[in-house]
Image (cartoon, rainbow, N blue to C red; front, side, top):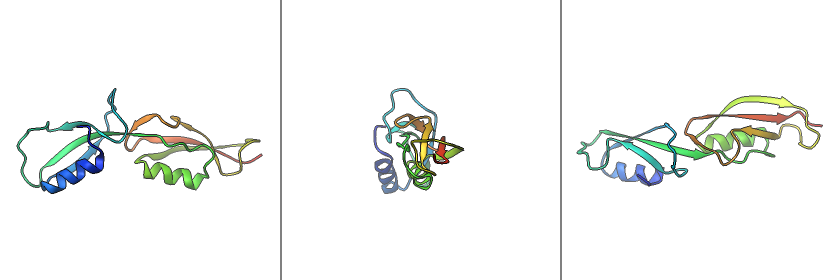
Length: 122
């Protein structure tokens, strides 16, 4: 535990084991690190066995980004788009993100749907 996803993947690859990522939000977890694992450390494993880990990711700052860039940022973070709502906004350019729910910086399980509001323009 405490390793980044890529560190955990590399270590397991070297042992011939598989990595499965699940999302069961844990208090006190740090973004992009393994929070829990099953089976626990020290368990005898055979090549081809799977270790399941829990990883949380931070919601990226999407406000001001184009809709396309926001969707790409969510995907790159291991998240997905939820409901996309459009509304008029005098201070935000057309097709740019006004807000997200949950907001930037919130730790969420991988695969969580993030709702965004996109501007129809002034």
